[in-house]
Length: 474
Image 1 (cartoon, rainbow, N blue to C red):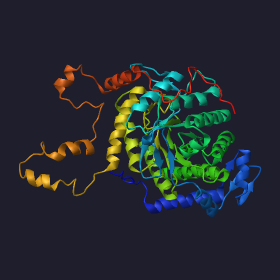
Image 2: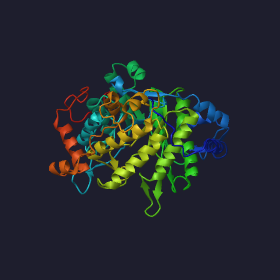
Image 3: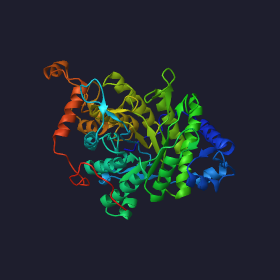
Image 4: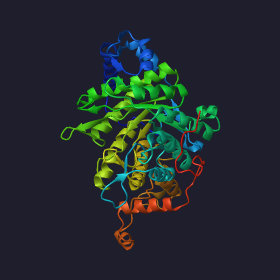
């Protein structure tokens, strides 16, 4: 049964085209700043106007279109097991974790605490067995490590504890080098890694209309390596983008396309993924919000823009801004995950485990969100109508007043068409009460405990008994 995407379209087709044309007008008349020297040279070669002092380049519409057309229309993020391969741009919708969160919320705790390397390993082990989490985007930051040890240790943990695709942000140039060399060894060779990329990297741009030196350098380095690269922008309504959603979409589109263009100027054909982490500001506190419905709408509308350009898309949804596992935690995550998924986003990150403005991860929320994602995926698939599913023979055989309990198709369709939850409690009250009246959080916690009590499953032994890795050399 194929997934039916594009069911939610916040933009009409002419509105998609207006946002596109507005973006091209910004590129041609306003331009954007480029503060990374090598990137500035790349853009100077194709610009129609350059301000050397302000580091501003302006590019004509036809040039922009020519460059972004070099980006592949599909990018496959591979798992060690081919069953976990995710082909972005294929029409399928994939969900994954995200971050990078600094904190963990332990079950029953009132306050969060700083995340450590062991927490990341536990998160990855949970993700490995969650059926509806397709991609393991490394979601926590090991605060006890020096920044120069972070990249290689985070990716080593991912490659050790799951055979799903590993994606992550990077923090140093040496870290990018070390991670890719390590992944080449895990894949079997440099060629094997490029043929079946089991890792991908994230390098963020700076809104609005600016390419900074640090992440510009990382973007160039990663593009030269030919590894799949997500290049998200993070405009915030009312801060780094207009408060109007349409205006925010223009900034989002420009910023993401700047990043896409750079990757194609550096290495045409680089497997690049257009990224959106757009959201809004709370104008009372002037702080970032991760969960507003408008964030879901912007990310859904951006899916329409990426379909228009035929570039794979890295979207954002599923964050809750609550500080504890409560009702808000569930409905905020569910609404944005469903909206963005129904819009046909290729890969939705941050979809599981994140709370408190994306600062904190909860293992129990990972389990609960996995259930939410299962429901969202089922809704995205839609209802299949054909001679078989119409069940006319069964209806005629049962006749008026009949039932379908013993129908041959009942068991088959129950397994094929109906989502079967594992955390939700659908028992009668008497059975629930006899079991100690467990709430959703407790049931999720019991699942977490059972997973972590088991002997860790290792898919490779990159850590080699060491608690912390250094670099892997040239």
